[in-house]
Image (tube, rainbow, N blue to C red; front, side):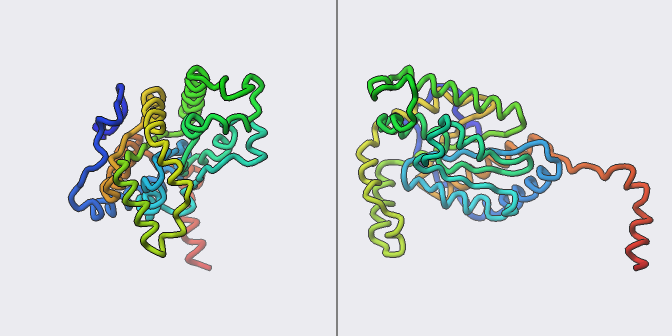
Length: 282
């Protein structure tokens, strides 16, 4: 999966948005079962949690990817959070607060569908949104320069370093969708009645900011991909292939940890036969 990992400077326009892997759906089914077993063992061990971060333009396929990749994992072992516009309570705290309290417990897999990176992405395209945070040093959008966002990205790096040191395995995926494919998917939402509910006029408004979003994504990929919290740029025009690559990356990473179920305490082991006999003789 090193081909997709951001380990140096990336230029988004030079990266592929489409790959086709043969028998992607069939391969994914096998991986799902392995992920399920790994999560069970990870839960029993109780030392690590996993944070999966998904970012991408509208229609990139985040929701369906979550559904298909984690379909076989115990539902009690998965926590999914989709971060929308901050509410009144969230705005009374620092911008990372709502993400921190949503982190997965040890033994569980947490999925952020849109993430803390919205704070250097949407707010960079629409800087006026930050005014709602009532930051003492920010009087107007003129105060929101490159230094502000660079500092915020460094704060995010520190946040991720802290939770990684505490036992959170972090994997971040940018679903790299082409503008042409987004157009096709938006048209499909309009053409198919059963998909109409997914459409919002706001999708077209954000599409007008495509180049700004690409610039902001490129910036955050280059400045926040770290060994303890790497970014992977996933070709997203073909959904089946994108899901497979993400699943393979997660599996390959988690297998390196060699999670182990704990042994039964010795004080119980020496009485195993007694426990068995007690049940058999009821």
